[in-house]
Image (cartoon, rainbow, N blue to C red; front, side, top):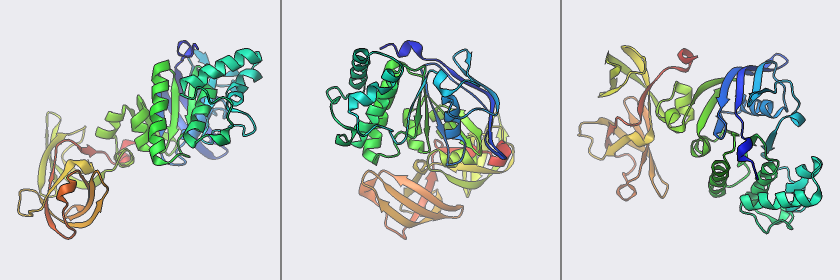
Length: 360
């Protein structure tokens, strides 16, 4: 199969999509490099699925240009775009065998039955389902059905492979395994892939880059690490992973380093273009350390909730700057509810952030 050689970039140039008076996608521009996996991430109604459907040609742009490789496909119908989509519902034909499902698109495109069957078997082998061709979809697990849907898309050898919430029908453990399989296939074949999800953990796990969308626009684009460690604003900080968003005071800024007062704790943080005065910080739950003595050098707090989750304990701590959500891996040293604690913050995982309004 020559899938990797056909991988093409995807470019959005100031693309807008309106449904009557409702603007679903508003002046969106980005580029997906050939052979990379980019995830469109955001809450329901943010415009991510509409953006994906415009790549596929299932929705047409109201304004702007869409390119696949060097070809302007803005006005081309879905049938004339070299794109395949893996749907949330799998969309398998229940009365067809697995091999018939996988070869269906090839047969419709006019490929002889024997050649279509051979390519379909190759596709099943790629997704680890060699020997499953004679089964019906109802005889497969949810994860296996999802892999059949991926194989059906792969055998068409598309320039771009699209995933629309592909794991939403799977349980948590299976989601983790199937997302790893999808990522392995994408990397091994060098596929250009655009992946839509509202699950931030899923996005962090599979993506080369993530585009976070909010209210029909791009809130931030970057690598998973960039978005987690350097969120552009309060919305991104809160959406990508858990974050405690609290008030702080920038006491001074020198050489792009801010002296920041958080409650009665003073930290040196990258200023990120902010100046002296009131500010907001995002504190990751893992950046907070607790000790049972409330007489230490940290901020005083009281344990209000404690939840044991096997690999870690989650605490809710009442402090002078508000309630803090804390993740602590010391499961053998659990702190009892209503205990007084000392709260300290590490430099890693504490970030100054702009308000969402000022970032727009």
